[in-house]
Image 1 (cartoon, rainbow, N blue to C red):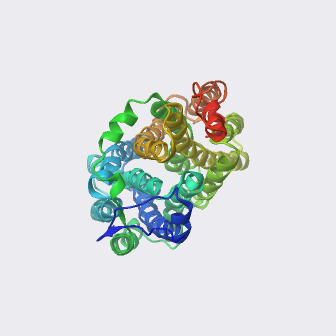
Image 2: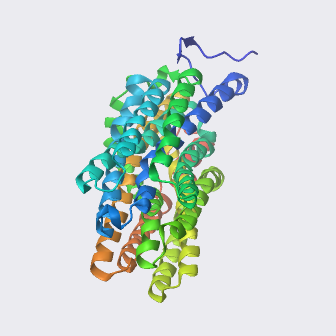
Image 3: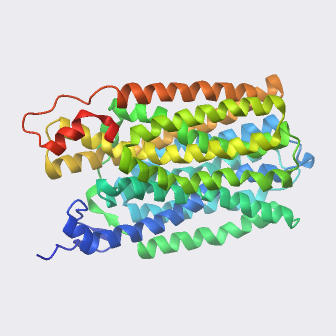
Length: 456
């Protein structure tokens, strides 16, 4: 029997059924993968632009007249804007279409990049740097729209891998721009060289998205899904957990270089040699976190991941008090890796939770799949937005810790407590108690899906 092909109308795909294995094997997987790769490219550059100021502050020596507190405040507002814009970016996929919005959102990255190119010089006021930094925050929104879009392309059994790859490829934008900065600083180049490299790359990403991506009609004009997701308690529970994983990743990505220069006296070049390692490994490990969650259950992987993050943070406190730079850097890299692993496992949990809730409500077959896909796609943007606020908290915590104690130890104590809270929430909500009652008509597979969130 020949599998039905996707029904197209221009750049819109009207019929899309990835849960149909014949459809998926015949045409669906090829189309989904193509959209995934070009989504990754746009999101990758978006992350680079968002974290641009984490490396620009390393170029800003005494001649710029900024204090360490000023720099932490600057990176905090950039992170804040990146978190806030994730909410409208999530809605944008439903309004404009995934392909169309990818073109627009990629093109918008030109605004903060060109603005930074114009003002990046000594003598520019701190308020001007803050304003231009706010513009760079739009790069953080690309993640939300990209994840919402790609979630709709893949079947539930492949979402952990696909979402992990999509997000991990985007996250790599952080170490890539740090490596580019390292090369430029090492060659005695200025920050405008770095910005000049990214301007044409942004244009290329927008053009490729226009040529090779597709819109899915099934997610069009469903802005009500976000309202429904916002009313579901699991959206906010998962947002709290995502603060611990992604909030850590993005917050540490912004702050790591500054901690090395302030607390350990490293020069900008010496810091740049080290700062890219953690974000790079944390990005590369994210798809593995999704794949492990596909196999063993996202809640189980997330639970033990928080144990590792708490242990690593405790060692960081000791390393900071003993002023041991080798131990501090080594364990900080481990913490980055664990944050990336947790990013993959937590995002795998989201579609599984809403699919399981659909079954618990008595929905079956395609109705259950459609319900789960609709709410999980909308919730991802909201969860991603709140999770990114963790990066704001981390930078503000470091700022306050350095102002009060002259080191980051106070901030790490707060982070340790938060990881303990996330462990407790994961166990209490997703591993200790069942989802709900199993309808008498449920099949064996549906019964398993309903009995425990540990499988999501």
